[in-house]
Image 1 (tube, rainbow, N blue to C red):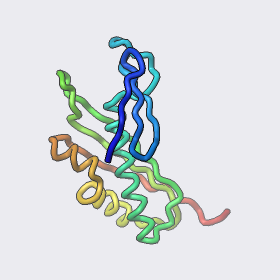
Image 2: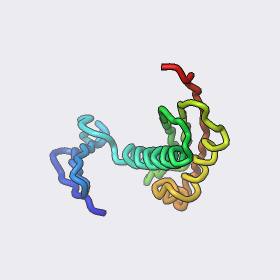
Image 3: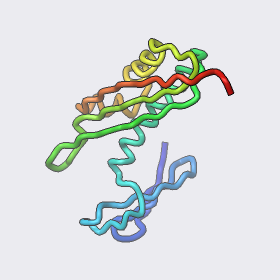
Image 4: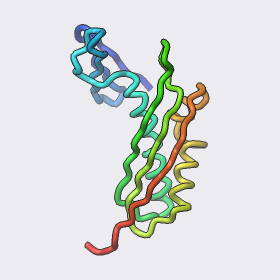
Length: 143
Protein backbone atom coordinates (compact mmCIF):
# COMPACT_ATOMS: atom_id res chain seq x y z
CA UNK A 1 0.00 0.00 0.00
CA UNK A 2 1.31 3.42 -0.90
CA UNK A 3 0.27 7.03 -0.71
CA UNK A 4 1.77 10.42 -1.48
CA UNK A 5 1.36 13.55 0.63
CA UNK A 6 2.12 16.94 -0.96
CA UNK A 7 2.30 20.20 0.97
CA UNK A 8 0.15 22.88 -0.66
CA UNK A 9 0.45 25.91 1.68
CA UNK A 10 0.28 26.74 5.36
CA UNK A 11 -0.85 23.47 6.95
CA UNK A 12 -2.83 22.32 3.92
CA UNK A 13 -1.74 19.03 2.32
CA UNK A 14 -3.08 16.90 -0.51
CA UNK A 15 -2.90 13.13 -0.21
CA UNK A 16 -3.17 10.80 -3.17
CA UNK A 17 -3.81 7.15 -2.46
CA UNK A 18 -2.21 4.31 -4.34
CA UNK A 19 -5.55 3.80 -6.08
CA UNK A 20 -5.54 7.40 -7.33
CA UNK A 21 -8.03 9.04 -4.95
CA UNK A 22 -7.26 12.51 -3.63
CA UNK A 23 -8.00 13.80 -0.12
CA UNK A 24 -7.37 17.30 1.20
CA UNK A 25 -6.07 17.68 4.74
CA UNK A 26 -5.75 20.85 6.76
CA UNK A 27 -4.84 21.77 10.31
CA UNK A 28 -6.73 23.85 12.84
CA UNK A 29 -6.98 27.63 12.48
CA UNK A 30 -4.65 28.26 15.43
CA UNK A 31 -1.90 26.56 13.38
CA UNK A 32 -2.75 28.43 10.18
CA UNK A 33 -5.39 26.05 8.84
CA UNK A 34 -8.13 27.36 6.57
CA UNK A 35 -10.59 24.45 6.84
CA UNK A 36 -9.61 23.20 3.38
CA UNK A 37 -9.81 19.55 4.37
CA UNK A 38 -10.20 16.99 7.11
CA UNK A 39 -7.81 16.80 10.04
CA UNK A 40 -5.48 13.78 10.11
CA UNK A 41 -7.09 12.41 13.30
CA UNK A 42 -10.51 12.74 11.67
CA UNK A 43 -9.21 10.56 8.85
CA UNK A 44 -8.07 7.94 11.36
CA UNK A 45 -11.57 7.91 12.86
CA UNK A 46 -13.13 7.74 9.40
CA UNK A 47 -10.81 4.85 8.54
CA UNK A 48 -11.80 2.84 11.61
CA UNK A 49 -15.51 3.49 11.10
CA UNK A 50 -15.57 2.78 7.38
CA UNK A 51 -13.46 -0.37 7.80
CA UNK A 52 -15.95 -1.65 10.40
CA UNK A 53 -18.98 -0.68 8.31
CA UNK A 54 -17.48 -2.47 5.29
CA UNK A 55 -16.99 -5.65 7.34
CA UNK A 56 -20.46 -5.55 8.88
CA UNK A 57 -22.11 -5.09 5.48
CA UNK A 58 -20.09 -7.89 3.90
CA UNK A 59 -20.86 -10.29 6.76
CA UNK A 60 -24.59 -9.48 6.73
CA UNK A 61 -24.85 -9.76 2.94
CA UNK A 62 -23.03 -13.13 3.00
CA UNK A 63 -25.50 -14.18 5.68
CA UNK A 64 -28.32 -13.27 3.29
CA UNK A 65 -29.65 -10.53 5.51
CA UNK A 66 -31.86 -8.02 3.70
CA UNK A 67 -29.86 -4.91 4.58
CA UNK A 68 -30.97 -1.66 2.93
CA UNK A 69 -28.80 0.74 4.91
CA UNK A 70 -25.96 0.98 7.36
CA UNK A 71 -24.69 4.05 9.16
CA UNK A 72 -21.97 4.25 11.80
CA UNK A 73 -21.79 7.22 14.14
CA UNK A 74 -18.43 7.55 15.89
CA UNK A 75 -17.42 9.57 18.93
CA UNK A 76 -13.78 9.70 19.98
CA UNK A 77 -12.14 10.89 23.15
CA UNK A 78 -8.53 12.04 23.05
CA UNK A 79 -5.81 12.38 25.65
CA UNK A 80 -5.64 15.94 27.03
CA UNK A 81 -1.89 16.31 26.48
CA UNK A 82 0.27 15.76 23.38
CA UNK A 83 0.45 13.47 21.53
CA UNK A 84 -3.39 13.64 22.09
CA UNK A 85 -3.96 10.05 20.98
CA UNK A 86 -7.41 8.49 20.98
CA UNK A 87 -8.26 6.98 24.33
CA UNK A 88 -11.80 5.78 23.60
CA UNK A 89 -13.96 5.38 20.50
CA UNK A 90 -17.67 4.62 20.58
CA UNK A 91 -19.19 3.19 17.39
CA UNK A 92 -22.95 3.21 17.03
CA UNK A 93 -24.18 1.11 14.10
CA UNK A 94 -27.63 1.85 12.71
CA UNK A 95 -28.62 -1.00 10.41
CA UNK A 96 -31.78 -0.79 8.32
CA UNK A 97 -33.44 -3.64 6.50
CA UNK A 98 -36.16 -6.25 6.31
CA UNK A 99 -36.44 -9.23 8.66
CA UNK A 100 -32.98 -8.59 10.10
CA UNK A 101 -31.79 -11.04 12.74
CA UNK A 102 -30.66 -9.09 15.83
CA UNK A 103 -28.25 -11.92 16.64
CA UNK A 104 -26.65 -11.78 13.19
CA UNK A 105 -26.28 -8.00 13.32
CA UNK A 106 -24.66 -8.23 16.76
CA UNK A 107 -22.38 -11.05 15.62
CA UNK A 108 -21.33 -9.18 12.46
CA UNK A 109 -20.24 -6.22 14.59
CA UNK A 110 -18.36 -8.53 16.96
CA UNK A 111 -16.59 -10.33 14.10
CA UNK A 112 -15.51 -7.03 12.61
CA UNK A 113 -14.15 -5.83 15.96
CA UNK A 114 -12.43 -9.11 16.87
CA UNK A 115 -11.19 -10.54 13.55
CA UNK A 116 -11.59 -8.44 10.44
CA UNK A 117 -11.27 -4.66 10.85
CA UNK A 118 -7.54 -4.06 10.70
CA UNK A 119 -7.97 -0.34 11.45
CA UNK A 120 -9.89 -0.73 14.72
CA UNK A 121 -7.90 -3.80 15.78
CA UNK A 122 -4.68 -1.81 15.32
CA UNK A 123 -6.09 1.02 17.45
CA UNK A 124 -7.17 -1.45 20.15
CA UNK A 125 -3.68 -2.96 20.25
CA UNK A 126 -2.35 0.57 20.80
CA UNK A 127 -4.55 0.87 23.90
CA UNK A 128 -7.65 2.59 22.53
CA UNK A 129 -10.86 1.40 24.18
CA UNK A 130 -13.42 0.70 21.46
CA UNK A 131 -17.06 0.24 22.36
CA UNK A 132 -19.76 -0.77 19.88
CA UNK A 133 -23.52 -0.61 20.07
CA UNK A 134 -26.23 -1.00 17.48
CA UNK A 135 -29.79 -0.19 16.55
CA UNK A 136 -31.90 -2.02 13.99
CA UNK A 137 -34.50 -0.16 11.99
CA UNK A 138 -36.97 -2.55 10.44
CA UNK A 139 -38.46 -1.56 7.10
CA UNK A 140 -41.72 -2.98 5.91
CA UNK A 141 -41.54 -5.20 2.85
CA UNK A 142 -43.84 -3.05 0.71
CA UNK A 143 -42.61 -0.76 -2.03
